[in-house]
Image (tube, rainbow, N blue to C red):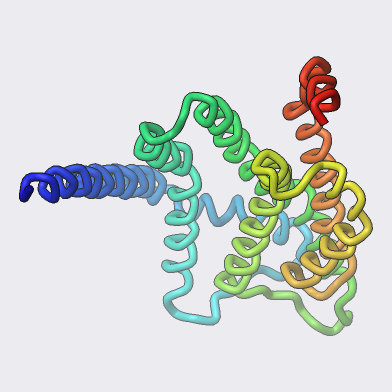
Length: 254
């Protein structure tokens, strides 16, 4: 009788050992990429600040109000970049850990969702950098008083940009979240479509909370949220559409 608890305890220990190993692999991947990028830390920050510095008035530049900011701002940016670049490998480690416990149909659904979520997150960051930042910084640098010189602190700028990167990266996951809700049976596509007006209002509320208090940045976040929600509905109708034969069978049974 004493052998049963030992047999149950052994798989738990082996799972914990595997989890620790995969976490170590993930941390090691982040560290390796960080060390490779750290030499280019200042160049990375120059690239990140280009949407703002290109719009600054002549004779002005970014400043560092803290004596440690010239080192820690590029350091923080390089660490965040290393985490973002290693995210596919980290998600692969997570997938390798949970995959043995999934059914075959769950694996077939999870793999494309996992890959598309990575692509959508990166797409959200690219959208923020190439579309939102030029419009946003162009607005902010043009509305200030003429006698006020615009000299942004590098740490404040980095925190602001990373916040928007994270917000847009998460927002671009809306199609995946919509498809998962419909696939799980929590809601139906028709039910979500009927609440479209409420979704639009929620999109603008979220845009107001996650962006600076101006209508431009709020709209630049809210409108993509709504369009991505519509994309999730469309993909759900295509991917989870029941064959005609099964629909007729269900109607005849009822």
